[in-house]
Length: 106
Image 1 (cartoon, helix red, strand yellow):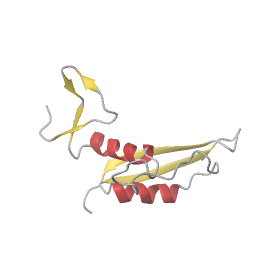
Image 2 (tube, helix red, strand yellow):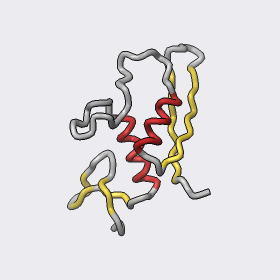
Image 3 (cartoon, one colour):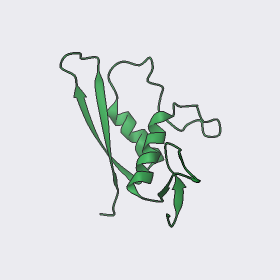
């Protein structure tokens, strides 16, 4: 049992309870980053500026600097490092991997 539980993302049931993660844990911060990356702008009516621009019809290039800025705006506890690689076979494919770690005071 967590001392300060938060719902886990993705939301799941673990009978007879729901999945939780500890507040300020790597799992909780990673879940918050995932939420920012999954929500298109305007999807949340109560907070329309939350999320990222819908990438459905955008160019194949991912603007990793803009993505980093949005994630750091909504989840300041995360340090975001992007590894952007182009597929040598098909330059239209771009893979973006996110690595989340807890930001510590320096």
